[in-house]
Amino acid sequence: MPTRRSTLIHPLVIITAVAASTCYAIAQQPPTPSRVRGTIEAVDGDVLAVKSRSGEDFKLHMGADMRVVGITSISLADIKVGSFIGATTVPGPGGEADAVEVHVFPEDMRGTGEGSRPFDLRPNSTMTNATVAESVVSNDAHTLTVKYKDGEKKVVVSRDTPVVTYVPADKSELKAGAKVIAFIKKQPDGSFEANRVSVGLNGLTPPM
Image (tube, rainbow, N blue to C red; front, side, top):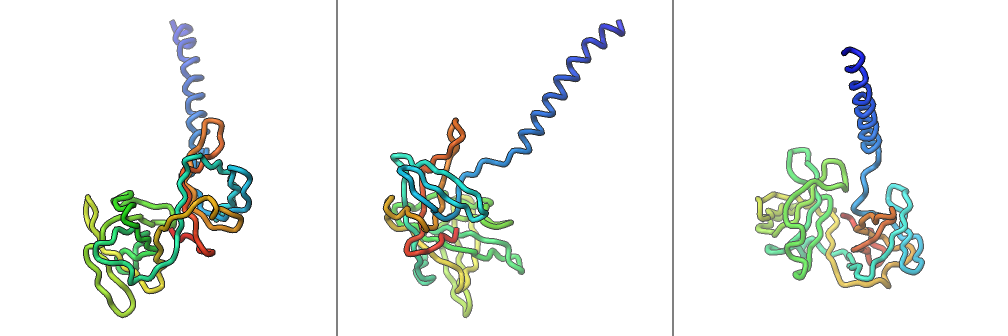
């Protein structure tokens, strides 16, 4: 009986060890990015060569239905009550939500990603897409009360905070030197396909 139990346990030990090794290997793999922020280095047919802000090189295939939108600077005064905006915020020293950047959506993009969620721009940053319900102007900042379907938030926007909006653009803007945010998905063969690209116009680096 002892011998039989030993032969039964031995394969189980091997299976457990292999499973643990596999899980460890998966855990060590870097997560697949959902977006690439960087600079276009070259365009070769339908492939964008992009160097990310962290120095990584990406080859991104442009799908036939890929959407291109331009990003351009606007004034803080262009944020109105009723505007649908996206705001990247970080916790301020007094616990307030300080805006790192604000982008104003055009009407045809109203409702895009509505809500508030963790964001990957900076440590502890949050992206909130919502409608401006109130705007209070002080000497050095605007405090926006924004409302979304699950709640509301106060966002402090300083006069130095970048404010941008989206405008129509096409693939002709995707050229060497352009600053982009490419939204990507990994293909079964390991390559990356870009399904949407936001490009800074007139040398602008998209702040989000």
